[in-house]
Each structure stands twice: as structure tokens, then as C-alpha cells.
Image (cartoon, rainbow, N blue to C red):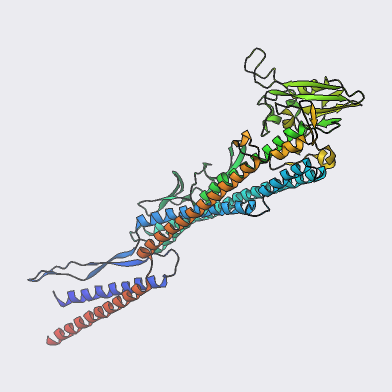
Length: 578
């Protein structure tokens, strides 16, 4: 090997050392840069063409590139853990929000309000509370339920608003990824890897993974495709775009995330968006549903007792709370096309009720049974609603009773009036039609959104039905006791649970789910932290290690310079010999 070859070796060593110093310096400079991946210098010995007795001597060192130090498998698992942890955190956040709204660990909760309400009826039966106080307690309970429903609805609306903000964030990330794809493809066309742009893109993928679960597929060009489920949202430099879209689901409209260019609804299961969907469609909606179910049954069960309750004198007039659309007044109450009835949480069934009239002058009592035919069969025994009872049928049947007149008012309500000297009461309603229509009711409304004490009671608490006719005998506190017993009596609609037990079960289940959500959030966070540690061990910058690398390349640079200096001196010596 000649002096020229030695000079070439020194020059290549000098260049390699310079690059090594640059790489180590760049690593140190970006030690705190988020998303930066540690780089290493790729070096390869250059094969020589001179042979000695011992073997071939190399011809220096070749630079093969600057490589990012990362493990694709760890990166993939880390991104998945980000999505898992973000979803779990969102779900826990929703559970905690509901627990705060329900406030069941204090005396200012629905369980306490229900207890106070039923206690009021019991005290009324014992003569220690006035009718006006029972009406007032009903108003307090109804107002409390409405506020709970409003707060839960607000939380649901906040989740929809959060969907909008998160979708906008995801769109921005996808737009940047598409832009970087284009730049990377262009800059790497010559074969060199653009590490800084790839770091930026990988960081965006991590940020996107926190918002929604995505799959990343790298193409030969260096660009990546981003998929949600099996649906591509970024293809090379093209961002398909995301948007919120209202989608029919059952009897309501739900906000979903869709691809803007195609309208395809995406199945987002993880990330913050997945957590919001899980919370909104699961936790929040289930709690709202349970509260509505409770309110609907409370309205129906108390109205069923109050409608067939009585005072010592009886009624001179009554009207229904339910207002029928004109087209529904002549439709059978069992007909699915009867939209007024279809909206009720509890619908009337086949049965009947008794109207008891009293002639105040003579004391004569007349009882009339009104049959409610809702079996869904014609008189010929065939399926159909032509012979089933309508609102008009009920009005006509009551109107036929001596001393009473009944009609459907202009606002769609059933209106009943007694002639002078006649009073009436209802009894033994096996059909539930009086409670469904809201005749002589305690509550008005259908669920937690509109439950309220009936206007006629709010205006005149003396209209409260405290007594009851049982087998023709008037029991002064019959209705008060029957309503008070609802606190402990099991209801078929609640699977044999009482009203209070049903709500306690709902709250207890929520508490268990919250505890489970907390455990999942903590465990997924630990997994995420563990994978991040693995990733940093591979891709993170260790400043001590880089300082040593810098010193190593500095010494190598000094050695390379010494090679060139020595070669130069050898060349001078040779020239001087000539």
C-alpha cells in the first residue's frame, strides 16, 4: 500500500469523524425535543486492493447513512397503548362526572328526595302533615328529577361538543401527515432518508393515536397510509378529511365521526374519541335511561293510585293531562299508529275501570263499569284494531252515564263534568287507562324531562285524593297509605324491586363501574408508561452516552488528522530524497 492510499484512508477517517461529531451534536441538541429519535452514524470499511502476506488491507471507511434508532414493533404497541389509555381516561372522566351529578354520597341526592316524598304521604295518612305539604314535596321531587335530567343531558351535550373539538384536532393532524408525506416522498426520491420529517410525522401519528385508534401502513415511496378500522383517512398526500355527521339511531339522531369525502361513518373504538363514544352511548345514555324509567314509573304508579282515589265528597269535574292529536282520537289506543299513545312509557292494556256516581240529594250510588278492549283482535277473533277502544269510545261511554257529560275538548283532552248535585269517583282500573291518560292525576309528564305535579293540584292542594273506596267502603287514608307503600312494594316493571331499590341498584352499579373504570385507566396508563420507557431506551437520547460519543469522534478526528500529517511528512521525506 502506498503513501497515496494512506492519505485516502486518513481523509475518509477525517470525514467520518466530522460526521460523527455532527450526529452526536445533533442528538445532544435535540435531547429535549418531543418526538425526536436518536440517530446513529452508519459506517462501513472500504475494501482495499493491496495484498500483503497476511492478507488484504482496507482502504478506509465509507459513510452509509444516518439511521434513526427505533423498533417498529415497539412503536406500534406504544401507539396502541396511547389509544387504550386515552379512551380509558375519557371513560373514567365520564363516570366521575355522573357521580358528581348524582351526588349519592350525601343527603342531597335522589334517594333522599324519594324517601322524603314517600314519608310525606305516610305522615299525611297519620294526620301529621297537610295536603299542601304533600303537594309541595311532590314539586320538590319533580324539580330535583328534572334538574338531574338536565345536568345529565348537559353532560351528554358536552361530550358531543368535545367530539367536535377532537375531530378538528384529528383533521389538523391528518392534514399535516398528508403534507409531510408529500415532502418526504419528494426529498427521499434520491435514496436518502429525511429523518427530521419522519420524526415530525411519527410524532403526529402518536398525537393522532391519542385522539383515535389508527393503523399506519408505510409505502415503498416513504409515504404512509392512515386507516381507521379498515377505512383509509390518509392516502399518501391526500387527506380524506373528517366531519361530524348526524346519523339516525332508533328514535333519535346521534352525532358520529365520518369521512368528509365519502360520508362513511367511522368505527372509532379507542383514543379520546372512542372514549367519548363509549361514555356518551353507554354510561351517560344508560343513566339517563334509568332516570327516565324511574320517572315514568313513578308518574304512572302514583297516578294509577291517585286516579282511583277519592275524597269524602268526590269530584265534580276532571280532565286528562294527555292531549290527543285529532287523528289519534279515533284510533284504537292499541294501534301502533296512534302517535299520542306510542310516546308513553307505560301504555294502557286490556281491562276496564269503574265510575262511581253519587246523587247528593238522595245519596243514591251508581257504579258503571267501562270496558277497555285493547286485545288487538276484531270481534271475529282476527288480528286488528277495528274493535279496540279509542279515546272517542271512552268519552262516549262516560257521557252515557246519568249525571255525567264527557267529550274531547278542543285541545285534545278528555273532559268530564258532573251535573248539578252529582259527584263521581273512579275505582278498580285494571287497564291503566286513567293513569295513561292522566285523568285525576297527581303527576303530569312522561319522563324525567317533564315530570311535574299536575296543575290542578298545584293550584288547589285540597284536590289531593287521600281516601279510597275499597269494595264499596270509603277508607279515609286509603290512597295515602297505598302511595306510601310504593316506597317498599316491588314493581313488575323493575323486576320486583321497589322504586327506591331500583334507583339504589342503579347507583350501586354505577359505583362498581366507576371503580372498574379507574382500575382500567390506571392499568392502561402503566402499560403506556412501560412501553414509553422501552421506546426511550431504544430511541431516546442519553446525554451522557452522546457526550462520550462526541469525545470518541473528537479523538478519532485527531487521529485522522495525525494520519494526514504523517502521510504528508512521509511524502516530504520522499521528495527530499529525489
